[in-house]
Image (tube, rainbow, N blue to C red; front, side, top):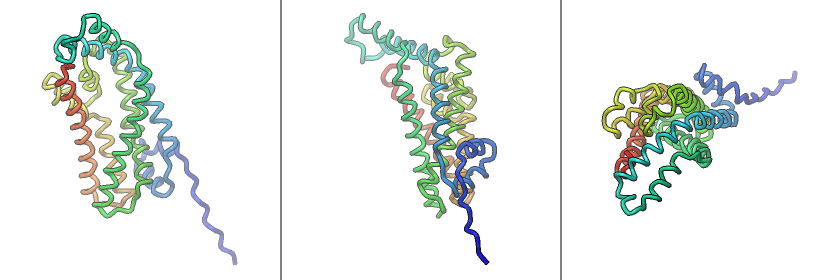
Length: 250
């Protein structure tokens, strides 16, 4: 009697992306057996680039307003001629193709650091995952948390109109989340809470689910590491806001 060899499971990256949104437990169980991230990367990039394009008019309007504030109040521009100041303001309102490159790079940076912290959680919780599987999971998570968030903001800015946005703080606070409640307070505090949106909370849940399902860690470790990632993102946003304020752009 012959015993047939088990058939290797074929990866279906597109199905995994959909399941990450609709059935995350199933998605991460699949990724633990068949790690794949190609489709997730392509979809996340497309969503981010489309979202960035839609946000373009609002981003440029905000950039002009912030540059006008800076040339008037920042010591950086104190010795600059009036002509150069006008040129700086004009340049802030021009489309810049490099923004799309930056967005693409930031996708990989975000996925890398998310993977790194999930790997730390895996080690703390004595989990069963490795870098490859957590990278694949993080890239799939980027589709709803980064990609769909960019689309949502793009649609919001399109509906409200570019004139509604006079700073990056206005942009970030437009995404449904805690930033809407603290927008009129300190710019640094507003930036911190603007990073806690329905999409970042979605990512918090997905990160915790990934650790529980793929790494088999305890729920305590999973949700603790997911919370650390969420708060670190908020602190980074607050840090950028503090830097911009110190440079006279806000």
